[in-house]
Image (cartoon, rainbow, N blue to C red):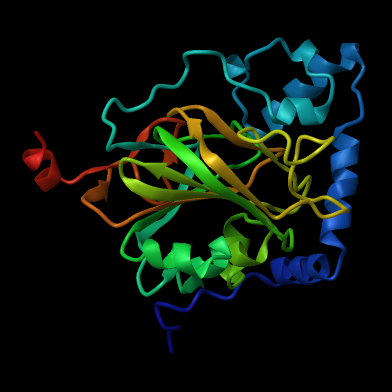
Amino acid sequence: MNAPENVPDRPPLGWRVALALLQRLPQAGLSRSLGRLADIPVPRALRRPLFRTFARTVGADLSEVENPLEEYHTMNAFFVRRLKAGLRTWPAGRATVGSPVDGIVGSVGEINRGTAVQAKGRTYRVAELLDDEEEARALEGGRYVTLYLSPRHYHRVHAPVDASIPLARHVPGTLLPVNLPAVTHLPALFVTNERLLCFLDSTLGRLAIVAVGAYNVGRISSAFDVSWARERPWVTNHSEPLPRERHYDPPLQVACGSELMAFHLGSTVILLLPPGSTEPTPACRPGREVRLGEALVQPTRRSDLSAP
C-alpha cells in the first residue's frame, strides 16, 4: 500500500544514522567550538584563495561582496559580509511586504487553528515558535512564509516594512540541521531549535520575524539592539544565558530595508503576518529563489480597488 499523502517518506538509512548520532552529541558546545574556529584570524595572503575556494564550493556570488576579500580577517567576518550598496530594491507600496533575506521559499500558507506547516505532513504550533500564546492568537488567520538561507546566501536579515519594535525574544533550544531532509523528517524542528525573534508593528498590523538557529556556528546577531549580547555581537549560543526578553518603551523605529539580524552561517527565517487583505505574490511559492526586498506579500485585488 502507498503511504498516506500527509505522512513524510521515510528518510534514507545513512541520513537517519547521521542524525541519530548528531542528536546525541552536545550540539551547542560543538557549534561554539566551530564558532571559535571561525574567529581565528586568517593571514592576509590566504584570505583571497580561502574565501574564493569557499565561495566556489557553496556557489556564493563574490561579485556582490561589499569589500575586497582581503578585508575579511576571519571566516566569521566573511560569513556575515554585507552586499554592495544598491544591489537590492524594495517595493514602493506600504502594504507590500518585501523579502527580509536572500533565500529559498519553503512552506507558505495560512495560520490555521494555531498551526503552520513545516513541510509535508509536519506542522508546528505558532505559540511554541513564538513562546507566546497571546501573540500567536493575534496571528490566527494570518500568513506564514518560510525562507531557507544556505551557506551561499547573504546572511543578514532586514526589516520587510517600515515598523517599530516593541518586543524581542530569545528562545533557547537545540541546534539541529535545518536543511531539506531535516525539515521534512524531524517533527517540530522550528520550535525545537534555538531562535531569535522580534515583533514589528506596522501599517499592516503586528508582524513577527523568527530567525531559527541551526547546527554549525549557531550564532545570530541582533542589529536592532547591539547591547543585548553584552561584550559579543551575537545573542544566541552563549555558554552563559542572556536576558531572554527585551521590551522597548518607546518602541525602536526601523525603516523598511534596515538591518535587523545576521546569521553567522545559514539557517531559516519565518515571517508571520497578521490576518488582513493580503495575498502571496507570484514570487512567493515553495522552491523559488528570492532576493532581499523582492515582494512576497501584496494587497489583494479587492483591497487595491477600494484604496483611495
